[in-house]
Image: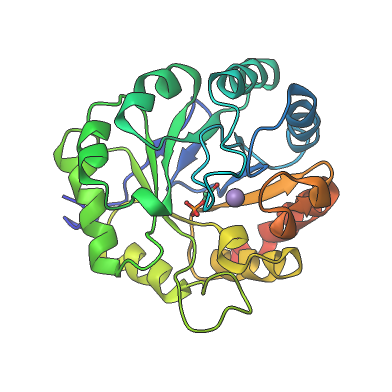
Length: 264
Ligand code: PEP
Ligand code: MN
């Protein structure tokens, strides 16, 4: 299903009446790694809603390496996202880590994100077939392109055709960057599937000064959009502070993408 009629057909995944992945317009998703407070998210939404950023991100269920690290605001965070969603008329995207979270997240968000660590959580993928919301499927930390496509296949074959793929870097030997951004995978996925493909340069590089060049490169090689972490006070971010962009830098970056997109 993921691979059928690749060259002749491009799937459009609608996020809201005005925002769709895979069409003419780039879709830019911005926001912090984690929802930390209403004030934080309000500042983000206020700034990004005035720029060409169509959707808000923010994790409320966080897959942290350490069980002692902040695990996310949970339902309180979902309420914050839902509030801003209607206040700023911006769709919101947030991560689901388990089957038991699908229902409540689907009731508050416009798109469910499946993180890298869950890309091959097959029971979760099957359950997403009936989630009734579009899915943002992130590539596993060490997943091959074939494994990534087959993970999408689980969701599609269980009844949900609204899947967007997200390249977010893979593990390699060099830890100068957090991961290695596989831009060839973006071009390949665009050729072998009909699904929209976006890029997360933030988790790929892990360093804010490398986010903008990789965001531009992603658009140049055909990505349908980007998901980028930004924060009102980047260095104070509770999680992923090192890669968070200042809101001003986020807005400037997004403005600089248009000519690149127009040239592709
Ligand atoms: C995230 O987007 O917040 C995240 C945890 O990303 P990934 O699953 O790609 O590591
Ligand atoms: Mn993060």
